[in-house]
Amino acid sequence: MNIRKLAWKNLLRRKSRAVFTGLGIFLGIATFVAISSITSQMEGAVQDQLDRFGANIVVSPRAERLSLGFGDIALGGTEVAHSRLAIADKERIASIHHKDRIRSVVPFILAASDVSGKNLVWMGLPSTDLAIARPWWKITGSPVRERGEVLLGAEAAAMLDKGPGGTVTAGNRLYRVAGVLHPTGEKEDGMVIADIGDVQSLAKNPGAVTYFEVAALCKDCPVEDIVAQIGQALPGARVSAIRQVVESRKAAVDQLRRLGFGVSSIVLLIGGLMVLVTVMGGVQERTREIGVLRAVGFRTRSIFSLLFWETGWVSLLSSLLGAATGIAAAYLVAPSFGIEHPGIRMLPALLGTAAGLVLGLLGAVPPARRAAALSPTEAIRTL
Amino acid sequence: MEPIIHLNGVSMIYGGNGTRATALSGVSFDVRPGEYAVITGESGAGKSTLLAILGGLQIPSEGTVRIHGVDLSALPSDGLADFRRETIGFVFQAYHLLPYLTARENVMVPMSPERVSPGEKVERADSLLAAVGLDGKEDRLPSQLSGGESQRVAIARALVHDPPVLLADEPTGNLDSATGEQILDLFSGLNGRGKTVLMVTHNPANLARATRSIRLRDGRVEEDRILAPLAV
Ligand SMILES: Nc1ncnc2c1ncn2[C@@H]1O[C@H](COP(=O)(O)OP(=O)(O)OP(=O)(O)O)[C@@H](O)[C@H]1O
Ligand SMILES: [Mg+2]
Image (cartoon, rainbow over all chains, first blue to last red; front, side, top):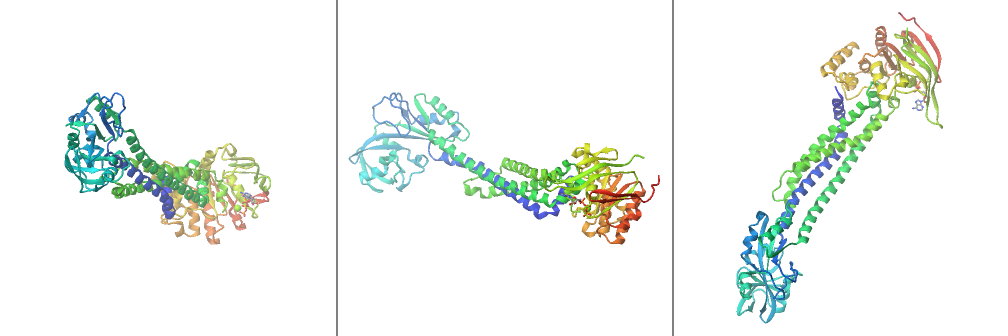
């Protein structure tokens, strides 16, 4: 018989109380572990999905007067480009040191040209890259699948009064309208989208590229490094990260993490309060028992240690159980959170178990102090 | 012979300004080792309060208490706990066994904070249980023991640290007279082996075994009488 065993025996005798005390911690830790292991896996998944969603770096020619940027590409010859980009530059971009971080490099060409009597801007990109570069586009009809087909922006289609299956002429050639883009609110609404080869021939500039869109996977790798490396590979080009895109991705993941942290903190707090209340109630119920222990010579420290072992046992067991349940729950629900390869995260489980133990012990502090302060005579007054 | 218990001008006043209750006022007496003192008095006379003070469970409002050479007022709370463990064995009217522990485990409770090997603890508990006549009932729970048997367990528990002083508050109060007699036999035997016994009781029959009678009234010693001379 020692204090540890005494505590254990006392717990066994009050199973339902012990279960109730443990329940708070169990639920708190299970939620904490489930949420934090899901969020930590989601960070990866969200990052992956966001990275799949369009480009985050634009490579354009360095211009003398106008600052060029995404969505702000000057057309025509008002400014003197120092150097021009060409299809061949794609190889250079794709062979930088961090090449494994680059998901896609898509060349674009913009050119103004007459289409069935209207002067419109043509945007050309490899038809095979359309789905990668603009996955969010909604199209009536079908996207451009090969040369000779065009996709009309919503405004362009209205202006030309054409729909899927129609034809337009440009540069003495007939193009089939494969589809019409739903309004996007962007410049492409007024554009004609076609294969890059067609637009290069229209512009009589084979091999020319107006800009490249680069999609880099920037999970735990500063996008600045990639920008610098592309800049080195193409000294004449202006490489800029689309800050907004990068930042909003970070923000989305951060928000997720904060939400998870907030929810599990609240649940943990409730668990702690449950421990406090049940242990406190236990002390009141056991006033006499504690008085007897003091009468037989228990020091304050031994009374403390008894109550701590009691909550210690409960919180250890329920935290371990909670952590295991949390891991299992996270594993099971992972697919519905877009996590394709659910894994087991040990860190949240370890943190959770430790937190549960600490919380349980903290919850025992006020009751233990109260027990220690009990006057022994009051405790055995009921003689 | 040096008294084992020395009380001088002990008063105990409960409560604050409005509701002051004087439980003891100016109690002084000495008890020599080996005495068997019976403390009597009406309900509310201060008997339990006196035992609590003697056992270091309560600090008197006034006066000095010296037991076994230790001045209780000078002790910090851990010191009082150690004093209780080493010097005092308590026996209560309601036994106060822990209901979820077996007889053996109840006897071992006072040893539980100690770093003694489990085997040694069990051995000590079993020999004490045998000494109070509970051989073979070590594994019973209090609910499986009669009142007299429960009180024997409580006495065995009080004896764990072989204290020189036994304090008992109506130990036979919950027992029928035959069973009560057996418990009193135990106390007599312990007293015969040198333990100093102070027993609170309502039952005048208990006086027969004692060497001394102290009667309290309204917190004062009303009568203090030697019943039998101490064999030296
Ligand atoms: N904690 C307390 N607060 C206030 N008054 C108290 C307290 N404890 C005891 N008293 C009072 O002190 C007096 C003595 O009480 P005590 O319990 O010592 O009496 P007693 O002689 O043991 O009585 P009984 O025979 O009924 O057990 C009583 O008047 C009681 O009301
Ligand atoms: Mg009393």
